[in-house]
Image 1 (cartoon, one colour):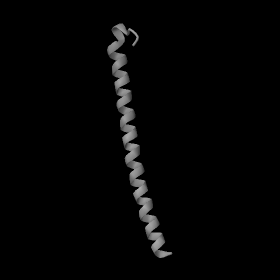
Image 2: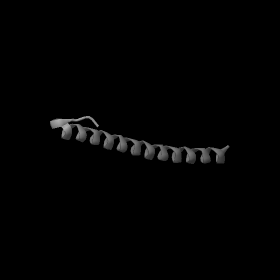
Image 3: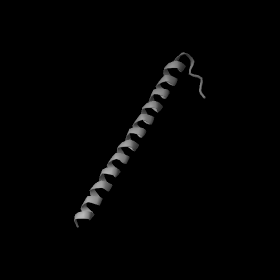
Image 4: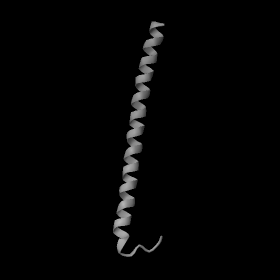
Length: 51
C-alpha cells in the first residue's frame, strides 16, 4: 500500500464510503430484481390460466 501520509484518513474514508455505497447499490438491485421476477411469474401464471 502506498504511503498516504496526512491524506490517509481522507483517502481510506473515501474508499470505505465508495465500497459501502456500491454494496448498498448491489443489494438494492438484487432486491428489485427479485421483486420484478415475482411480479413477472405472477403475471405469467395469470396469463396461462386465461389462455
